[in-house]
Image 1 (cartoon, helix red, strand yellow):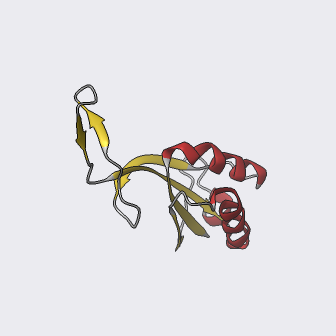
Image 2 (cartoon, helix red, strand yellow):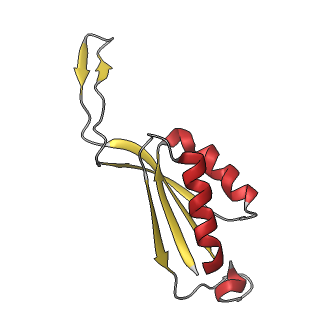
Length: 112
């Protein structure tokens, strides 16, 4: 099993949902986060537009989904096709050594 972590702009969450729906993946989590990277934050107008402020961090959404090993490459390709423009973002893939469904007691692949 693998956990796919995506760091994307907030406005692209619906695109991720569509990719997961097309791949018949049911479960995911998402979080609102802020971070820094290669893309620099743009100045924001404050004080009724009379002053500008340059934030230190850019708002992003982190999406986490756990899938079987054989689905990983297909999902990465689908995410890149759907999101792979100049929006910035990252995909990380992490091994999941154990999964347990608390309500049924199923483990590993059966738990997801």
